[in-house]
Image (cartoon, rainbow, N blue to C red; front, side, top):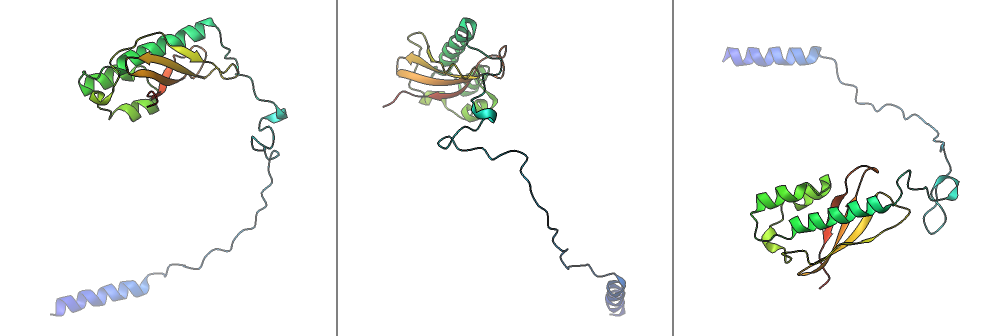
Length: 170
């Protein structure tokens, strides 16, 4: 019985000798925030770009090679996508080469058996925004209707990658 009492006494003695934690909050410092640039306006109230103009495509312009590459990527990606009879792991691995990192994550859990399209039936057509050299929408006809693919690239020489497959409207 004496040992437990001795341990409790030692613990209380140590606790009494320890310095108490300071729980008083530090006084708030008053700082003034000064914007480094004027606040940009929303799209309906005016331009958001410096100087009031939309920036150019920053060196990426649409040309025949860019369009051909986007069409080719859209058709090949849709061909790999529209294979409902392929085993899930093989389907995901084959498709991933055409996808952005986000799309790879998004489509990794898709069961290809649930995809109604089984083949591409025609050439892809692009909806090009001349002011945006980084992205394009492609319409790809399939035996289940026309899918819309969002393609993105990170630079002029970078490959086009599919970010989203949108099935045909019902």
